[in-house]
Image (cartoon, rainbow, N blue to C red; front, side, top):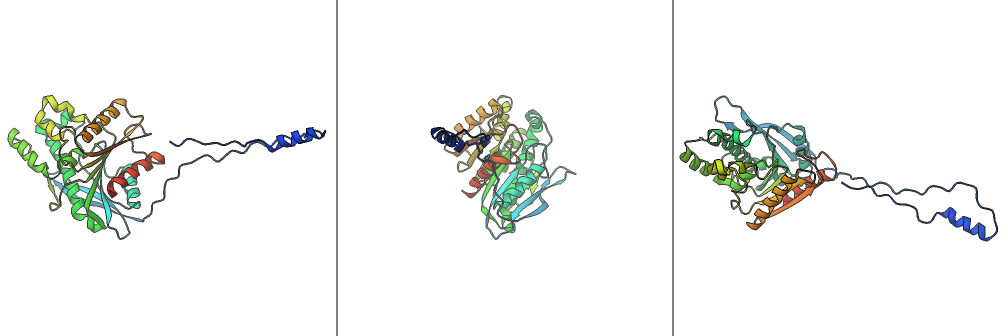
Length: 319
């Protein structure tokens, strides 16, 4: 946060008059000296978005193959100018949705800064990693395929909103989608190998844009536990190999990764993020880490930390 800055006047003028009168034998003034003026307090002013924004809501991008399951949808936020604009896929955290206010606000603000932003919904069912690992990781496969389909859709349809399909950045809240950004186009092949070995799970989704690539160029992480999947390392090493951020280091080596945490987050989370950042750099990734003044899960609504987050996304998208 920006600290307040206050200044004080130097040598008061009235003091000079007192000394001059005393030297000449004159009387001292009886008036009360004027108080020293304070410099104005420094206040952060968020930049004004440069572009008007058009919002297209509830576009179908994914069919869940479970009988009776709803079609998954996404929203697109786009600048009204001619472009071509860099493309960002904003992936929400577990048990959130594309309609959560913090995501609609961030999507509009990023679009106003010159990005085409896709915000997909994806289904959340389990509350823990061990619950999601049941049925040979069926839910893991569904979630990863959902991320995969959203990137493919963004690639294939970006030009409809004057976006540049040649570069896609993912912003993942609570680490959402990093595993898929690392796996890329190998996702279905790896899951088919796993399913053949374990007797399942079968494919869970059908992308409504199959022609594009799921390759991700840059990933921006906000909050989350980089070791959340390590609980599977001993109990289910094959599933760990498909989910763990650490196990997947080495895939998509051109991926640029920027980790963002709050200085008031739990020390364990920051230490684990630092460890992951070091592992990425050691493996040759273009990786960086920034510590903001935030605390916990919430994306900042305003102020310097909000602007730092937006600048991190803009920088990743424009590289």
